[in-house]
Length: 197
Image (cartoon, rainbow, N blue to C red; front, side, top):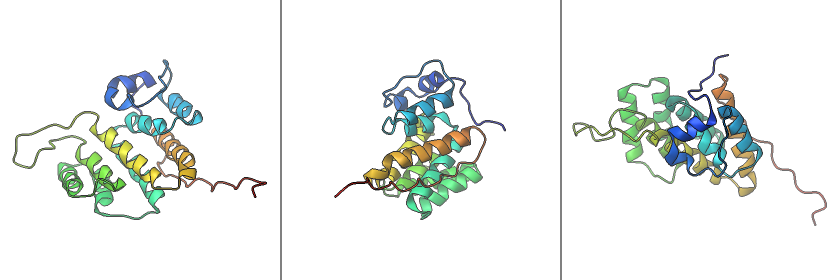
């Protein structure tokens, strides 16, 4: 099975995306990138594992992973922004990228799917209006947008479910990076504590 990794060590991920990975408290050793992702999940480092996974995957794969996370978290509700992001993943052409960027520009930034469309729209090319002088997106834009989408979708769930959803999303990202699918399985519901009055 081939991998979708573009980094040999976790430290390379941090070096490539210093503005995004600055949010991560734990620093990597010279270790394989997926080992560090697993270490972040095991230590329950807030949203650090989500931030790292968004940086770890190549842009197109990161957007797809984000789409799978948001679909699972929202119960498969769709809107134009989500569909535009998925369309760009399926056909990563300039027309699709530009359409996703335009939908993101006119959508609510309080909605996770807006950030997925923005992630696709800022994956390359120019982010300036058509006909204007070209402006390249920052190299970390897609990772930052995917991270925002996944975290925004997680925080809309009950707080008691957050850690389980973080684990489910990051485990799907790891599996996807290893060459598997990116489908996110909903975590088992938390069991009530026994002996509670």
